[in-house]
Image (cartoon, rainbow, N blue to C red; front, side, top):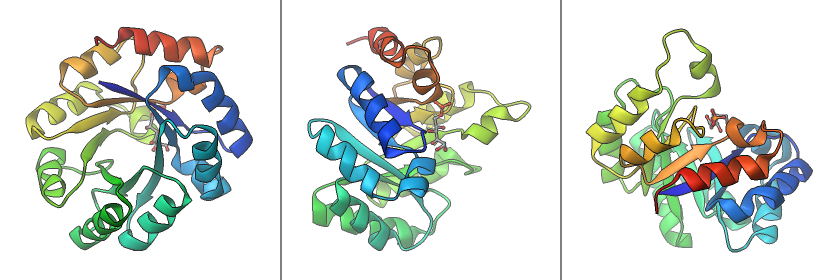
Length: 208
Ligand SMILES: O=C([C@H](O)CO)[C@H](O)[C@H](O)COP(=O)(O)O
């Protein structure tokens, strides 16, 4: 299982500093949606230039203009972009078309999708490299949120998936046991007193 750090910071400088600390322990460097909205795709280029050996993940959360948004992010240096599962099929197909043109990949983020299992199967058939079983920051704060649902949906969908939203050193083993290809950790790393130590602990919890 791969480890992805979600860099939900707000400046390119902060992302470069965080990436510099945690890159030795992670496979995928994610530029979070707030970062991209704050800094634009220049942040993607800066991270890719600094870490050409890492997979750079631009969390665009595209809802429309799939081919155009994916194309500009791939041109800026992204290896993976996200499209929302709530988007129409044509948006996902457009992003997949751009990915094929660049030799890159699309991940479909199932944040806010009611039936994640069904949509996971549909978007995988449309060409998504994998789906993200995702509970966003707001959903995690809602009463009744259960991390376990993300895992059971991933298992039930039986397609390649990542898990995002509440991954930490206590939960990462369950993510791997559920069969995820990627565990995404944001706050557990960027909010830690020592992000490098936190990333190293998450890495150590993954069974090779
Ligand atoms: O994708 C995310 C969110 O929508 C804000 O951009 C987060 O990066 C993702 O939910 C990670 O969550 P935590 O690991 O719980 O910080």
